[in-house]
Image 1: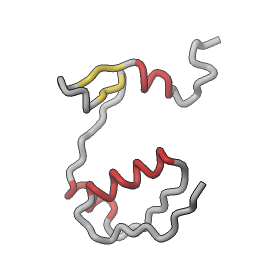
Image 2 (image 1 turned 90 degrees about the vertical axis):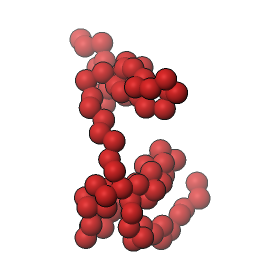
Image 3 (image 1 turned 45 degrees about the vertical axis):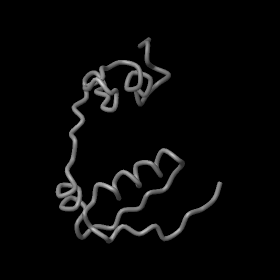
Image 4 (image 1 turned 135 degrees about the vertical axis):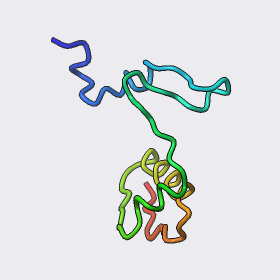
Length: 84
């Protein structure tokens, strides 16, 4: 039996196994993952002409807010926000 069989998405490893890329501890690099710092232009080009729906909890909201702040497009709209 694998040690991480109860963690099929390897979340514990992503959070606990890695290193900080800077002295201010703002950029975390999980072992075995290459996190690319996308520029606003790259995010805008990637999402251009697409409709993206963010559905989920506060973690998904953080992904939405980060995507919106990285995009140089004004087309990000939050149509509905359901209170939990």
